[in-house]
Image (cartoon, rainbow, N blue to C red; front, side, top):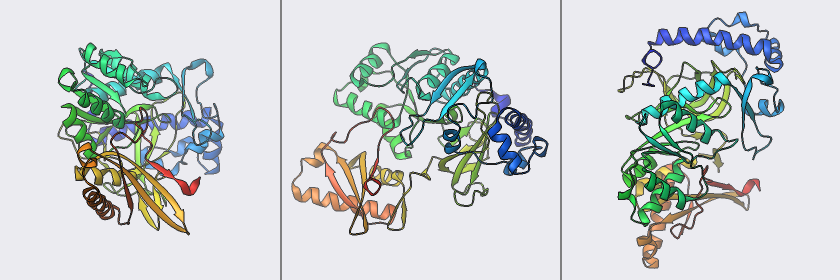
Length: 431
């Protein structure tokens, strides 16, 4: 059984003691093996002996994505090249790619973490899981693949690129689980639904991640496919998928604290905030050898709690992400997150969760237009009915975000489907 009760059901004092011991080791490792960290600690007047436990975490400097880019490609590696067995990297669409390296032990730890996450979704030996994340430099495909094999499950390494073939293989090979982005799974569900093939599939669960999604989308996926859908979280800088996952109770994502030390800080002050309050998630890797990171700012906005879950786990839980601090749009002084739009649309029940937010500046005034797909039965209605639906959606979104928007209804399946991370925002102010 991958659910390791000695780690996932520890008392808070036991977990703190384990984290403190591992923090001391990782601080020593980066101080003596990574010039970049040694200089940052020396500039702060710190030596490894000044860090006695996790209570001293705030003494340490933060790390962000720019630090990885500034030291590209190997400047933050703490292991010699001879010990690095795999390289992954971000796409680099917003600048230089961020490169991360893994030792053999790192791969083993990563596989175990993903396996523990898959266990929460009911995947085990005897399961057949279709991995529909991208394989390659992106961590999703290989991360899920190795974790499933670690469990003893049968893996179908589908990757992305051909939905027709994916659904055919899903049906023919009897896949019982799938790992992919939630937006792509919704597209798969729509494809199966349109072809009347949902009764033919054997899916029981899905493990979705790589993009933020709402509780309403989870429920919609579950109802369409008659499965349980689970949120898995990770980022390549910290490890990849498997940093956290939600269990059958869906009351937050359990963080594998024995490997990843979480903090929630104010994005403005970078000071710790109270449990339960929303702030930016920060991680320190406690066991990583290839590229251990100290206080890495994820930019993901969430809250954290330490109460025991109904499933029996005592691991800290983070709430479903509100968004990213760098994805937040400021429109006429109002903070707007795509997740707010998605939740409002799904609550209505008359639209699909496929939308595009376009922000433009006309006569020095920011304008937000939301293009929304509607179901066939609504789009075929008379013009007056469509106008009424448009006004209703505009009111719903305005009530959700506190800002007037313009809504444009578009035909079903006219918004491009993504097999990777869905593009929700086009900010023409930056073009």
